Image (cartoon, rainbow, N blue to C red; front, side, top):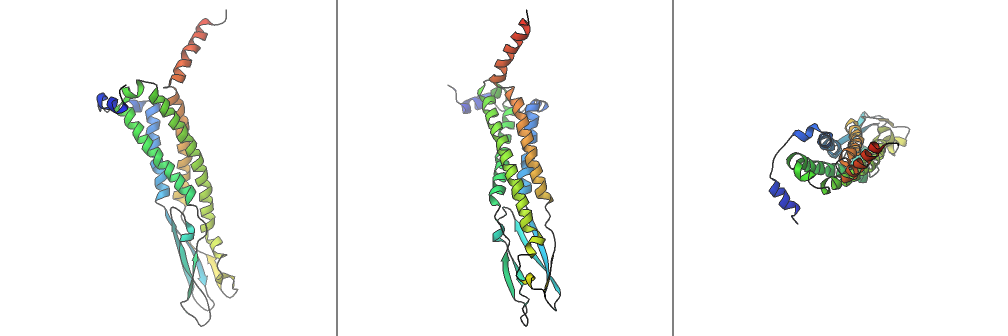
Length: 245
């Protein structure tokens, strides 16, 4: 039996953009694009949250805390003035709270896997279309992987949506202020400062659920290429031809 590698070599490399006019390849192209958007908007994120601290008899100071992907917030520190009388320039190191790396990294991992698989199948659709259609193995494997990816997009997007909610809560300046010991002294004044910009992360969640729709919807078009659909079609045609007597 001829191996897959031998078939690929014998088939030759021939780019044909015609399949992009069909839903099967066109949706796969959209999956490729939105997978990039999904992991890029999450993996490269960095943000800053801030609070304002005014010690008794002193000017207000802005305290900034930086954080980034993969959102191990407890590793990100910031220094807050002690506000002790007769002691200047003394600070206490605090850390943001929470570790939300598991949901973020799971989401990015699924995005990268989806990108790689979409790249491989686009090459197959556009360059080796006859090889893809010559047997039922190609469409069947493609269907199984696509269904699995749709399920993974559902689980990873849901997990990251919850993780993002937790990140927003943990980095909210209003929540950071209440954790500071110096702010519990009525002689000192503390107030929330700069809000972290979360628009990019909000977009990442949207891209995740868009990927879910694309991968789930494409299952139907791949199913039509499998023997499961083709074997059912003749039976339906026979029933229509016989009709009621």
